[in-house]
Length: 145
Image (cartoon, rainbow, N blue to C red; front, side):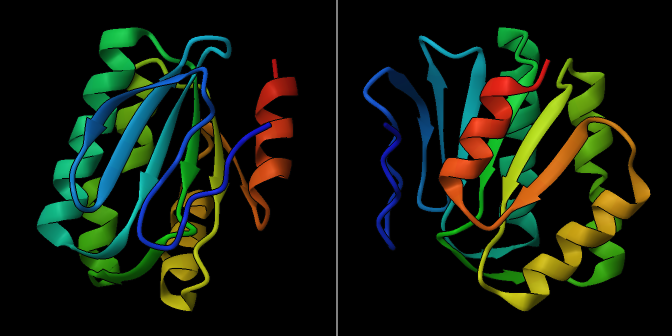
């Protein structure tokens, strides 16, 4: 059963191995499921977002990962405007790196939801569904392709 992140940290299932951790992003790969967990934390600015996105893209490429659970629940603020957000082009970079499916768990922050929805409206791949609930996102990722 997946563990839910605490407000100030991320926790992953026992089968997941922590690959990367800093104050705004934790990454783990699951030994039993062929996917990557990404958990974003707190307030993030443009430079942090770019660094985190690059780390995820590199990890996906290095491990040949096709599925990502992108957990934004602990993310409280994203200090970036729409034009800068669009320039990052995170989703197409992930798809080019081998990623095919993303289960994206929404943050409670309305601005973050708006930016996520904007990206999803402009990108067909990787196939990305948004979720309010972590466990529902896990179920979908488990059952997709």
